[in-house]
Length: 69
Image 1 (cartoon, rainbow, N blue to C red):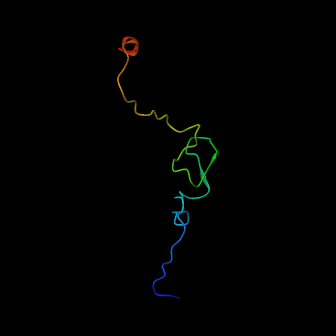
Image 2: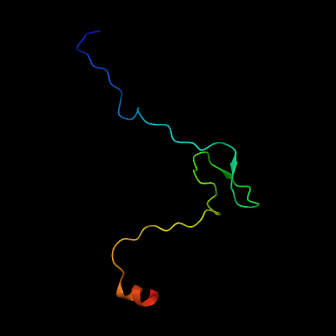
Image 3: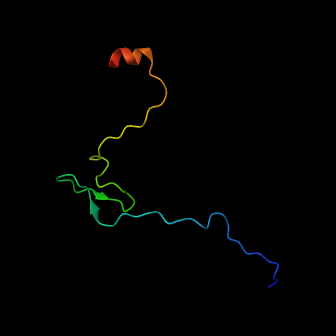
């Protein structure tokens, strides 16, 4: 092998493994036996997970302010 030769890998090869959160986990809600995926970081299934609302950006319209003030 020549001393001026460089070796490299393709761009798609150096990826991290997905983070896992344990196997054989069950939803934390009472009487729910839904098995959670090892990749689901939450302790509840989708049905019992607390609601999360996205952050709203921008300004409120006059109509919205009139209804919700």
